[in-house]
Length: 143
Length: 157
Image (cartoon, rainbow over the protein chains, first blue to last red):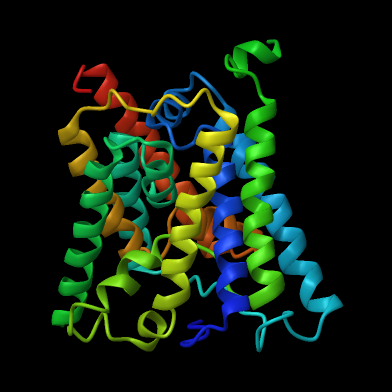
């Protein structure tokens, strides 16, 4: 699931545009505001379910239909798959992720996208995520 | 129970925003075939700087270019929303700094250990009907609900 090492300008532009749609959606749905996410986690507002539901339905349609309609992606070599597996790392990682998410209301997408809304407070969370990812990789790389 | 109880701030922007997020993931897949989860960018970007074998895996060194561009797109899209669709006031958060840093660290560590976050397992994993991702989503939702409510119950943040 690595993808192109060298990107053509057209590919780079499409990747940028895809990210931009994603970031626009995160902002429009107010998921870039930790207070809204924490409000969901405290059962005050069910909006996050609609965000997640809307995104999953569109993604599901794309992932199921496009590989049947096209032999390969328009600019790529093959349709990839999300390599998810259930093991102790996934369980522990997901549990830790949830504790952190419940503490700060920020997950990776909004930590990055939030910078586009002038929310510099989120740099604290982004810094934490960057260091957490470093610590995880260093620990995994030891053994 | 009426709609305003479930959605005190309205519901349309949630649904539209969710559809836009899905459209971004779908567009990436249509043109490149790539799976657009977000948390991998943190490991793949470290591969530029850290020689540790974990970061030098092909799945990170081979994807670090497009993942950074994808992340840059995230900021661009949010900027378009901020400049064109909001009142232009910079957003800020009342969540205390210690909670952002400590919570962020656990989010970074946990999402990489578990190989996915709200977008990787939540959107892309559920979107490809993978049951390990469903279990991961149920796990992090459970610990997030518990943590958020304990923190508010104890008046910590």
